[in-house]
Length: 203
Image (tube, rainbow, N blue to C red; front, side, top):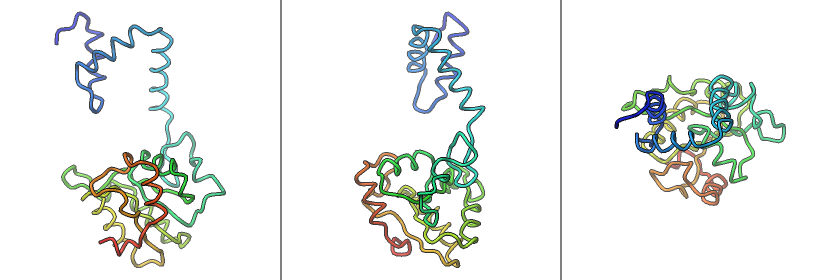
């Protein structure tokens, strides 16, 4: 691809590094931005800069937040004795959209995947175990995607906490095996949360 401008080429190269965006799509997006009012493009640039510089992870659940403790963890109306274990913020958003879960979350930041070099130490599993050790948690709901990596992560955590007095359950298999949680429709996902089953019966 031949560029008439080095500035244009640099912008296209950066945009094309985003997931699912090739050079042609990146070029179309960059040219679109050039046609917009300068203030609009600056606003986009500033919002991305602020995101990178100011975003935080909730110190309690590791969810993405603007403050030290996210709005969900800070809400006194939530049931703090039930924790739903999810992979990332997209899963929190998906479950919240169902309006069926009133407990708290624990965001792992990924799934165990030896092929991708992701082990238990790369996730927030240890802080979850520490929460359970404190004795303040009654139930853990495993809500990872029904994939090999998700099931492996669920089982690993289960083995870490099975000696503690805590109920473990998993979302019902209304979610098709192999599906990512974020793509499930709200009704199916909501029913899966409500009709969760004991984890040991999901093997």
